[in-house]
Structure formats: structure tokens, C-alpha cells
Image (cartoon, rainbow, N blue to C red; front, top):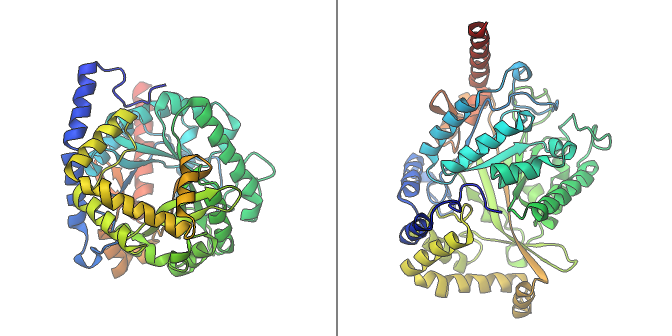
Length: 472
């Protein structure tokens, strides 16, 4: 079954032209322009070897007003009190936001389809929005608590096959209240929710097999003082199920929206200490998780580690990080990629398109493929299995050991007091997470903490009221 947004229905001539275009320009000019614009925003003191913003990523965008309503009552919620009475924006208004984000992010930029619980919106309209995002070369990630998929087993498959959905983030944690299943409705510990996480993992495996389509999955977790001690357990579960959960996004709670008082704020060092306790990492980088962090913009906003986790038989998965500090060979490889192919992504490509892009990269930098990448890969094998790297390579090639991309990120949103401080304003100037409101981009922290969300919801309600009056 063809993915939406590909050229499968186009003429052969147009498809060949597209392959030739990818061969000639593996990194589109407008993608490089978006990166250059992002890099120009970064203060020179933050232009470090581990800075990703403007070097390989142009940030992320998010929608607002797609479906403000939510059927959960979470203790850490960034929506305001009027969300459940605010009507959803018309589809045309949502696609207008996507147009603004596309201009900012460049081709195949990352967009979160979010605001309330999007799956409560009419499914045909969600499909229309997903298809439009793909049409204008954005990669939408549907943000959801996932309960709608459990209530309607056919919903996720339909979004995949009809809407071209390829990325979803499942928000699961103990701050949530509203799940229909009584076993999880009032969960007090993250341990209580592990069977639910396993259920979602099985659901994803099933829908991939059912549809024959790719589905990349993240797990979002709000972190409070209550569930902080269990962060290591969440990381461990995700790593052992990395065939499903490619990323864990940890969001220390911020004092905005409907978040209850006294829920507890978490500093970065404390959080990463818990992350390190849960991550099973190869020996040469043990105890060095923070040294392998990447930055996305300001250091106080977003930090993450990326790499792969290898599962060999019944043994726990083992993580091999890739960063400028993970090994000398990794640094050489990354420097070459950033210098020559920054912004490259294969996520929207079909096999023929990926081959054309890779061929274009090979022609421009054969040493990357003939020497640097094999050298780095050999280093990864030796780090994972110092005594038997060739045996491990053979097991991977035979499918007996599985390799899965795995990442952990922590993003710290700001409350009003922090946003107003000098460091808060410095962070705001480096924001990588933008929301389009009335044709202009705003930091998500501004939206959450300065009344922008409240004002925008009020304008949605006024427009809906005026429309009803006109119709009457």
C-alpha cells in the first residue's frame, strides 16, 4: 500500500524527475536555508560541537486550536480552564498554521499535531489535516493520550492508511486521570502503568503488521516530584521495547495552565541522574550519559541523547550513544555529515528515493561511506561486544540480534516567573519550539505562560459565535 505524499500515482516521467532531483541535491536548498536561519539565532557561546539546532535540525513546530477539548483531567496540564468549551478551529485555519510552519521549518520539518486531544475531532478532518501536512512536505506527529485507539481499534489503522500518519507520541504517566480501563484509571505509580505501556507496544506491533506501514512512536512523560523516582524504570521499559518506542520525551512539569499547585518542579541534573540509572549503556560510555548529550537551542531548554539499542536474545538491550564525545570515530563521522549533508532526512523517502539520495551523497563524499562510516560502525560493534564484535555483526545480519534507533530527550518549559527573568528571556530568544498564531510564530513557553493561549481561545470562541449569528 503506497504511503500518502509519495509520487506513486504520478507519471513515470515525474517520478524519474524526482529521483534525479534527490540525486543532484540530497539536501534541498530550502532545507539548508532553514538551517542557516536557525544557526543565525544561536548566540556564539552556544555554538558548540553538541549543538544540533541550526546544524542538523531547524527546530519543531506545533499547532494550536486543532481540538482544545480533552476528555482527561490531568494534574499537569498546560491548557487553560476554557479549553473544554472552546470549539475546534476550521480545517482551513489549521492548514493555514501549517503553511506558516512550513515556511519556517523548510521541507520535511517536524510538526506536532497537538492542543487538547486531537483524536476527539472528527476523524475525516484529522485525516484531511494529516494529508495536507504531508502534501506541503511536513512530517506531522500526532500527540495523544492514546485511549481513543484502545476504544476504537480501527482508528489508528485508518489514520495510517488514509491520512499517511507515520509518527505518533503516546502520553502515559501518573499525572493523567481519565482512562476508561479501571486498571489504569487511578494509577498512583508508574509501575501500575507498565501493563498499559506493554498493551500499547503490542497494539503498535499489530497495526504495523496489519497495515504494512511504518509507524514511528515516541512516549511522552510528565515528570513530577512524585514519579521522579520511577523515571529509571520508564527508561528501562522503553529501551527493552525500542522496536516500538524510538524515543522517550520527559517533560518536567511547569507551573502553567491547569497544573495543580505543589506538584513539584524538577531540575535538569536531578532528572538526568535518574535517566542514567535506567539506561543500560555500553561499557566505554558508562557514567557518561551527560557528556553524550546534544543541545537543541539553549542548554536550559532541551537536551537529548541519541544512538541505538541492540537486543541480543533475552539479554536486556544495550545502548550505544552517538555524539561528538562518544568516540573519536563518531566525532569525525558527525563532523563530515554536518559539514556536507546537514539537514538530510530519509523519513519521507520510499526505497527508490532513499537510494537516489544515498547515491547522490556517495558521489559527493565517497570517503564517508567507504571509510568513516565503516570505521564508526566497527567501533560500535567493539563497544557493544569487545571480545566478539564479528560474532555480533553476524547475529545482526542474520536477524538474531535487533538494532533499533533510540533517543531520550528532556524539555523544560517555563512558567511566568521564570520566563520574565533575564535567563528566561535568553532562553526565549533561542526557542526551537514554535507555534503559529494569526500568521506569526511564538514560543510555546510564551503560549503557555503569557496569556497567548487564553487570548487565542477567546478569539476562536468569538469567531464561532459570530458565525452562528451570521447563519441565524
